[in-house]
Image 1 (cartoon, helix red, strand yellow):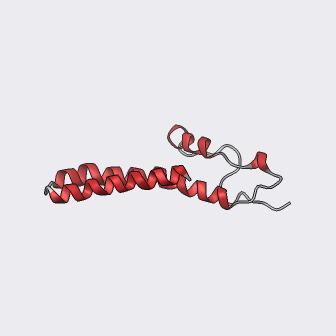
Image 2 (tube, rainbow, N blue to C red; image 1 turned 180 degrees about the horizontal axis):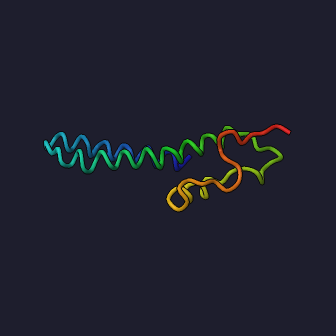
Length: 96
């Protein structure tokens, strides 16, 4: 829950940077600071928040060892191009 609140607080701070760039009429700050920062934040940390919510909503009762790891998934994004070792998040709840 704290990660989701932290990401929302960071996105609020970045949006305030956009309002400052409009106030001071600085198009350079808007296009070269706000736009890349909000894209990076929503792509990486928005995806992480989505993974957290999916993991909360998935039922791993009796299969706790098969639950996917958010930390390993986030580390593998830059290191292995998103390759997942183990079970994926989406479509991982198989019935026996």
